[in-house]
Image (cartoon, rainbow, N blue to C red; front, top):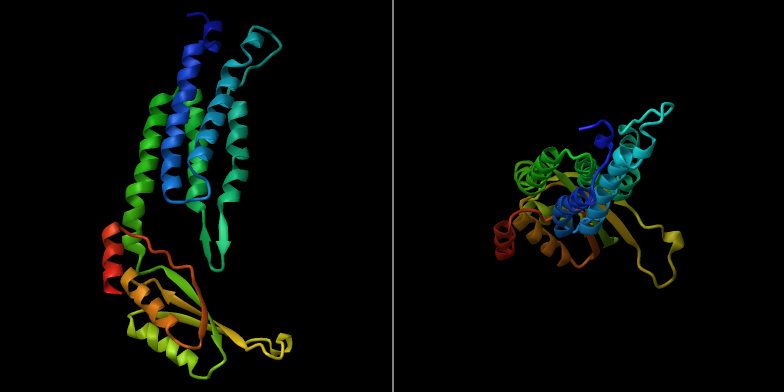
Length: 254
């Protein structure tokens, strides 16, 4: 094989690599789509195809200049720009809501999909396939294991809008304690009475930090909180994650 043949690729091989990039990126994106994440099926396919195409361009797109004595070929130059440039997509997937940050796993999946696309484009197919399998194992299996292991150590918040009443806080604490929900912090923001109209009723905000309980206890606690007459609104960043059996058991206990 001549040296110049290294820098050439046939249409068939090029097509196979791009299709494989779409399949591998789509496999990871399908899991993100199934989990209802910001970057899903099509996003991961586009990232993987794009990075594979850039890798193909970097290696084979400038083959006509290889024989030029004044040209130095560097196949990794465009690939390096993909790794640094993919960050803007990952940053767009990361969201902060109060004390919780979401989207980090999706941002990481976008970054690793770009790396898989580069491997496919360079013809490093075994590495691309193995990386895809490991990513899918991490997203599917390790996610469930992590949720079970860390459930008792994670914290979340419940934000309650309540009518001003001296007994409301005691009622909220009592309901949470009765349902096995452990409180870690309580913050009260009193209503600004200067901004109220004549007929408006003052509504304060109570933010309760809790250690993440079981789904069943959390569902029962939220149902009990909603029955308190002074509570006019309720929000939480608690996520009902777990197996289907866990959620069915949680609903059965309510």
